[in-house]
Image 1 (cartoon, one colour):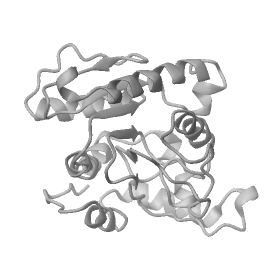
Image 2 (tube, rainbow, N blue to C red):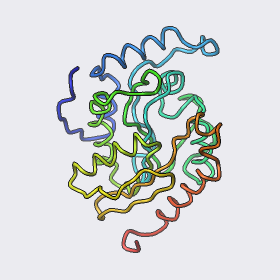
Image 3 (cartoon, one colour):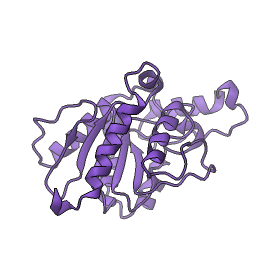
Image 4 (cartoon, one colour):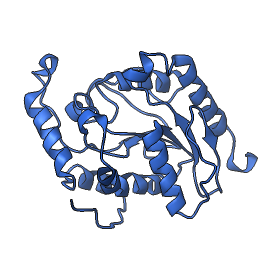
Length: 239
């Protein structure tokens, strides 16, 4: 399988334009195209997006939400990160409660959603079978989200949703030269680094598997966003 050649993007617009035409992962491209063709019964009138997803949000964001991958009938259908599935609704309700979104739902590209001080992306931009991307697919997609981190000039904190996203970000920090020995995934874990690196917060992923079983509750998710808001209220020299 081909791997991504290093490339520096100058803007988020340039990065997203390249990402949506990416063909590096044949398995994922075949799967997304198949889903877009077959569809799900309740979405038969939809024209599925069926391509890699661009990041979405406020280019001046201080908060980056780093997910795993689009859902087959969520982002892969709608063409926007965290849009059109159960995870999206749970996440967007929290973003709205804490002032990061203008509405508590995320259903389609034309639904009027605006994010404030927040940008959403994922470690894999194509929907993977069974929501399980392969290591090489995660590696192929690293170029995009790691450069999003650099292009978000005001970024102060990364919220990693789920263990896989968390571990991918920790690997990135290690390759940047930071010591990562003490970084462990647990819900609401909060880690700070030298000034030039954003802080890292962890949460269970808001998948239906987690929210419907009680592994992740509204109260638990609120705790994460409350800590993020408290962190952002402080100036860097006050931390």
